Structure formats: structure tokens, C-alpha cells
Amino acid sequence: MSMFEYKGLNSKGRDVSGVIEADGPVDLKAKLAKQQIFLTGYKETVQGGSGRVAGASKEEGGLLSKEVNLSDLLDRVKLMDIAVMDRQMAVLLRAGISMGEALQALVDQQEKPSMKKVLTTVRTRVNEGKSLAEAMEEHPKVFPALHVNMVRVGEASGTLDLVFERLAEFTESQVQLRSKVIAAMIYPSLMLTVAVLIISGMMLFFIPKITGMFKEAGVELPAITQALIFVTDIFTSTWYIILPLLVVGYILFNRWKVTDAGRLKYDAFKLKLPVFGRIVRLVAVSRFARTLATLLQSGVQILPALDIVKAIVNNAVLADVIDKTKDEVREGNSIAGPLRQSGHFPAMVVHMIAIGERTGELEQMLGSVAQAYESEVENKISTLTSVLEPVMIVTMGIIVGFMVFALLMPMLKMGQAVTM
Image (cartoon, rainbow, N blue to C red; front, side, top):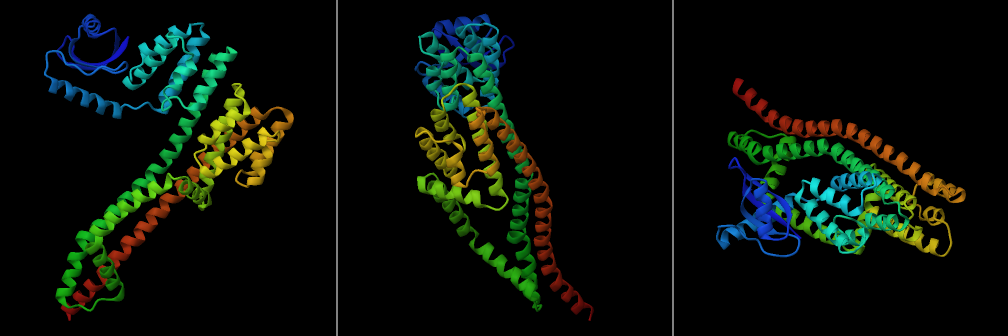
């Protein structure tokens, strides 16, 4: 069977669209007819095939394909979609439902077309005889190495329901942490944008007109006003040069940042930033602890687990430390030793890992570390946000006040000259 993206008209004459599984165009029309939908266009999306439109020209079929592709861009699989799937899979398997039936149930209830296509392909591969891990491995952008390895261990040990429950908990915790970070930074970012727009608008449109009046009146301008005029003249006369330079600089910086040397230097710089560096480190350490704990609890061996964690921390400096730790562990040494020697992991983390290794409770210790550091990240971000807001307001007030004061002084002089 193949997956088809379709467009049609329902019994009320309204446009409808969606994704459905069918053996071919004839079967597609028959299935839609049962739902009282008249097919106007379709595109095969899983097993090749080009888009065709019933009763339409080739040009119209091409247009439909472009519309579907645009829809795909707006309908990407998100981390929360994976968390929901993990939770549902855990419930279905725990209820004693077979793998094939569980995957079919996920496909049937899935409303997001992109996720439905992925799950349909996974189900097809499993029905063809592949393992679930192998089927998921074909979609690395949707199912990362963490998912694939844990599912592989779950299949081998017969604990897939438990593995999916742990994956759901892990993914949900990552979504919550990311949402808190993003939500905390929205207001400061919005304020910064508004401040830049207001100041830029004043310097481009308002200040040049006022300073032009001063020059025509021949008023002697104080130093503060002359400084404002100087800055404004530079801004208004060179903005069309500065803006392209900023864009080019941003592009070059991003290209440098993705190189091995650039990423290492940039990530090291982020860790050294005042205030923000601490938050970056806390987020990375909490990811390290949470991911490693989840992998070890699911039965993944320590060496492949460290390989997966290395990519999860999203920081080249810490990833290098984890890579060296893996080499030490391969030689029979502990995890805590290399982490302590690097100086990049907090002392409490190293101490708790060392205790966990000695007592055989490494997973529990890592879970405790993750929980503690996730709470600290939340507190740090809340504190930072509460401090940033008044600082930004005061800074914006000082800049605008400087501009107003610089413009008012010559106007007062002009008023005094008229009254005399």
C-alpha cells in the first residue's frame, strides 16, 4: 500500500484535504467515496509516484504538488509529537496489543500528515519483517539515535512498553525544559526589538527634521546636541552600508560556527559568558544526566550510551570531554575521573556520579542530578528574566531621555531668544 495526500469536496461542497492509505488511485477514490468525498487531486507520497489531479490538466497537478510541499514545510514533526507517540505506544503495548496492531492504531488516529507518513512507512517496514528499531532508523530526523538504541534494547529484552514509557518521560522533560527557556526569553527579546525599532525610527525620521530646524535658525548647539547630530548623521548616511555588512557578517559567522574549529571556539566562548554561560552549562549538564540515566535504565551499554549523550549535550567542548571519558571507560576506568579532570562538569555532578559508580546506583544518581539541575535552570532563567526586564526598561529610558534632553536644550535657547 501507499500513502496519498488528497484534495476533494465533501458532501457539503467544502474543500477538504488529508492523507490516506490506499492500494492505488482506484482504491483511493473508492475509500474517499465511502466518506462522501469527491476526489479532485492527489499525490502519492510514500512509494514514489507523481501527483495526479482527477479531471485536471498537468499544470494543475504540478500546482497541487507545490501546495502539498509547502504544507509539508509548515507541518514538520515536532518533539512533542514524538513524546505523544511514545506515550501512546507504551499504553498500547502494555494492554497486550501486538506490534502491528499498535502501529496501525497510531497511523489511524494520527492527524498530522507528516507524522502519519512516517508511521505508515515504519508499519510497512515492520510488516515486511524488519525490527521496529530498524524501521525507525530509516527516519533519523524524526527518531534520533537515542530512540533507535533504546527501542533496539527493548525489543531484545522484551520490555518495549517500559522503554516507550521512559522515552515519553524523557522527551516530555526535554520539551518542558526547552519551552521554559524559550518562554522566558520571549519578553526580553520583544522589548529589545521594540527598543531598536523606536530608536532607529527616531534617528532616521524625527531627529534629522528637528536638527535641520536648529541649523536653519543658526542656534548655538550644546555639546550633547552636537554629539546626537553626529551619531544621527552617521546612522542615516551609512545604514544602507551597515545593514548589508551585518547580513554578510551574520552569514559568514554561521558558516564559521558549523566548522569543527569554529564550533569548538564558539561553544567555549558561550560557557565563559557571565551569567549566560552558567545557564548554558546547566542545560547541557542536565541533558547529559537525564539522557544517560534514561539509556542506562533501559539497558543500553555504557559505551554506546556515552556516544549518544555526546550528541545530546549540544556543546562541542562538553562533547569532547564525554568522548575522552568514553575512551577512559573503555580502558576500565571510571566515568567520574575524566569528568573531574576536565573542570567543565560541576563538582556536585562528579561527586554524585562517583558515588553512583561505587554503590551500583548510577542511574538513580544521574536522575537526581538531572532533576536538581533542571530546577536550577528554571530558577536561573526566572531570576535572569526578572532582572533583564527592568534593566532593559531603564536602558531604553536613558537612551530616549538622552535624545529628548539633547533636543530640548536648543529649543529652550530658541524660546529664550524669542522672548528677549
